[in-house]
Amino acid sequence: MTSGSLLAAAGTLLQLANLTDRAALRRPPAAPPPVTTRVSVLVPARDEARRVAPTVRSLLAQQGLGDAEFLVLDDGSTDGTADVVTDAAAGDPRLRVLAGTPPPPGWLGKPHACAQLAAAARGEVLVFVDADVVLAPHAVAAAVAALRGPRPLALLCPWPRQVVIGPLARLVQPLLAWSWLTTVPLRLAERSGRPSMALANGQFLVLGAAALARAGGFAAVRDAVLDDLALARALRRAGERTGVADGSGLATCRMYDSGRELRAGYRKSLWAAFGSPAGAVAVAAALAVVYVLPPAAALAGSRTGAAGYAAAVAGRVLAARFGGPRGADAVAHPLSIVAVLGLLASSWAGRVRGTLRWKGRAV
Image (cartoon, rainbow, N blue to C red; front, side, top):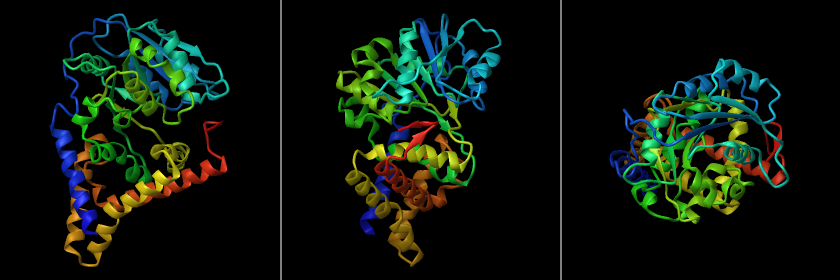
């Protein structure tokens, strides 16, 4: 319990360092210069009719991009996604809707959709945006400026702010950013070429087309459930540099509309986050020791446990800019960890049984 409390405090101190060090977490400019290279903004969309219209409108409202193109790939949708995109574009000639083809054997759906988009794109810089992401008007220009800045990168992930709806999302979604802020020294991670230290979030990715080609394109990650992270690692293996930026002021993402959607989304992919069943067990044990045992001990009167719990709550408050009510749910952090452990167990059970599916496709 003492070691768990100490590790909780260490994680929060690392998070504080990451958030305050501009060389660790990149800050896209609030007033970016006009983009002088051609940009292709690319959206893979499968059954996103309910959510894609605000995304399309936010793309076409982007400022400072010059001769940009906007491509939306309808990946076999059955809910009229393509029609919604066309209506939202209102005849804007910069946007084209592409009809996707089914993934061939050995490919998962999203990597194949992204590969089709990359093949059709004409830009030097590719900006991948999920169909549930809404961008601020300066978002793409700011992200390109951060990508091409004094320390240029091949891939940059401006991490969006998560819009959380419902009690399960309020418990789980804020952990997306909190997890890497408390475990990864960002300054070292960006400077390191090690694939294991790469970070990425496919909700909003900016990368050079030439660098993508040198890394083997999306064919290099054709069967990756966590294709965004796999892509960052493939780029690093090809000798490229990748990094992460604070995108909380650039983009918002509403991943799930209900607890059922959230459970299905995490169940299909969480098993892949830690490499193996042994890795998943080790991470689960560590999370329990650091973030569940100290508050349990605090309830029994342990001051050390109370200190560890307070450190964990402080860490959640620090990460609130990336999603969730600002600090209001931080006190439930132990419950957040328990919820994630339950989702992890369910994900591995589905993996072992071969029952994982997502949007009608086997994973």
